[in-house]
Image 1 (cartoon, helix red, strand yellow):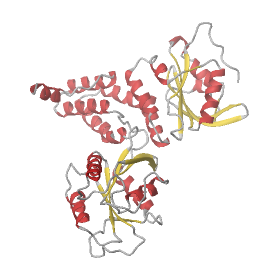
Image 2 (cartoon, rainbow, N blue to C red; image 1 turned 180 degrees about the vertical axis):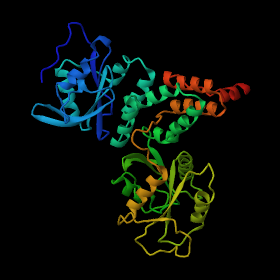
Image 3 (cartoon, rainbow, N blue to C red; image 1 turned 90 degrees about the horizontal axis):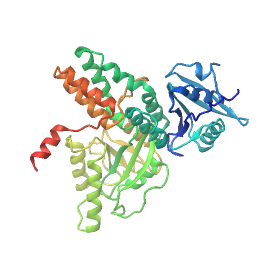
Length: 412
């Protein structure tokens, strides 16, 4: 396929790798021109290397249509998905490996495209809302989350919010409720769910986190109080990102250094999305075990995150036979028994419902705050205020909690 002839003046045609290098299974490259007169160039330069399975060129495809095909050149071929996200922009999704990314960037460069960093290219895109979505997409760490973010960034979320401005009160209220349904999941598309492995000392917390991560990230040593700092590791379960935290064993102690580690462990628990409370069922229950069970499993308060009880060292004889651990997940980190069950329980607890394809999902705290304000206004029958909040969400306006600001001012 012949290369497009660039115009005599500079078209400001740039390409940028949006996703972090080497971190995800998918990479997203955006080709953009800042000059409306040359809006057809991104599709044309992509067509120089892209061959769709449908046989139609990208230039023939409507804005927003995802096209699967192959990126060809230098006797190599990469499977890609391309999309004209607007009249002046094309996004290319490919394998996240550096070799695939470099092949595509090199072929774009050969077509006269300037390779830049994403901040440089973003400066030429006028909409703050578009920049926010692009930045969110750049932070994706898994194929699954990148695909969901890309779906929002290709205009779906923006179109949905714009359409809300055309609705009356009866229609806008349920639409806003739908948008907020998966708001917490939207935040976790860029921020991993935080899971804390807790329990008294020497119940196998470090061994379990190593089994979940698949490598020895935590120190394993048969001595109570070994883990004094919070040790974290990143992983993905079913395509969702998780951060696992191995904390100091929680117990009563006079050791000042260990006390500091326990305090850090409790602060980590407070900010967690989920706690896995480990009980060593190969030993009879201790008073510390009973206290932790009462704290994490007995009191369902806002201060205690959702908790999964893990009956650990399940490969050894059970010394808790008379205790009520019917709902516990029985796991042996030594043999691997129950590890997959624990992973599936973690995923089902934190993500009980997966949004259908084409669901509109806000992806930032700012978006959620404005949409929640719009929903509250709609419930109060103030459709005008609801639409102001939606407009502010679309404009990229910073959300200011006026009630909190007033409370803060009253103390000055």
